[in-house]
Length: 409
Ligand SMILES: NC(=O)c1ccc[n+]([C@@H]2O[C@H](COP(=O)([O-])OP(=O)(O)OC[C@H]3O[C@@H](n4cnc5c(N)ncnc54)[C@H](OP(=O)(O)O)[C@@H]3O)[C@@H](O)[C@H]2O)c1
Image (cartoon, rainbow, N blue to C red):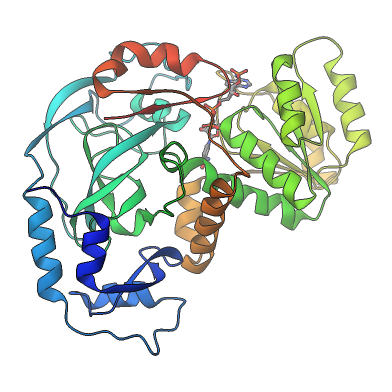
């Protein structure tokens, strides 16, 4: 028997209007009838008035839908399994040149969702620099050998303790990753999707878009009329440029390849600094004479990042959020921390999600979905690779410039 469609499930639950559930503020569906678990009501109601909504019946319906959906879930699946446990002591970059020391395609057990988790049938999974760092053991999270890799993706919820059963979602994986046919995700990390969102954007809806909005807020709250972004041709850099353009805060885009300059100006960068070529120090000074940014959003962490920071005006903040460079910088001008009150900080989305009010997270999630749906943002895609082609084809596809690779199980 085929799995019931999203529409069938909603009809059986008597859905009649859109409110929020999961992480507060994510748009989802409000059932007319009570949900089997009281906490679902709390999630659904947070931030919205429930007065006047008709809530009756429904437990048996939902259980039978769950059973019906489960019947279609196999016990085995294909997935790209991690080969190593824990962290690596060997420094590594976020490149992906040879996958075989880190992952392999295997038949795996389809994971069982425990309390608080959902099982998602993966439609597309993202391949981000954080995935590259993670499989190599140099990300801020320990590996578990034998588990599927992959942090985020999009797909359909097929089992678990959630009213989002049958719903198309973006998700952040935990316990069993997204580079597989099925994946585990904590239910509070499920984002019900607008129907007008492309799978290509939904596959990477969390890591880069939420980070872009969260970090842009840092620049906005600083009050300056511009901010600096390194690796500005990255997908995240392009999202930040779009935010700067739409909010009247100029993004100063720092890139290493001149070929990207025209495209970034076209996207709305207020200025572009190309780091290849002669006279960089003088060009940095000229940039900061024309603009006075106080926030440096830095994904690279090399000597040029440090040189930019020390050339910035008083009270400049260097926000380090990526380690794309293989060699760290030398800090030569320590008195600036004292006499110019400069600061170095870090940004990590995982910490931002832990420390931010659910209502704020919900608002950001809605904003990023709207930006994609309205065409203000677009994820540039090189290729969507089936699982069976990843080991061989991913390194070359990942090395292609200016766009992302997805895995399409
Ligand atoms: N802290 C957080 O919470 C968080 C969240 C999301 C993302 N991130 C980080 O954000 C960064 C961008 O992610 P993404 O997915 O947008 O990347 P992406 O689209 O894969 O692009 C990577 C970019 O990095 C540039 N790059 C690589 N190595 C470089 C180096 N040594 N010097 C200068 N530029 C270099 C590349 O430039 P070329 O085209 O010239 O090769 C490319 O533009 C990553 O470091 C990622 O880990 C952090």
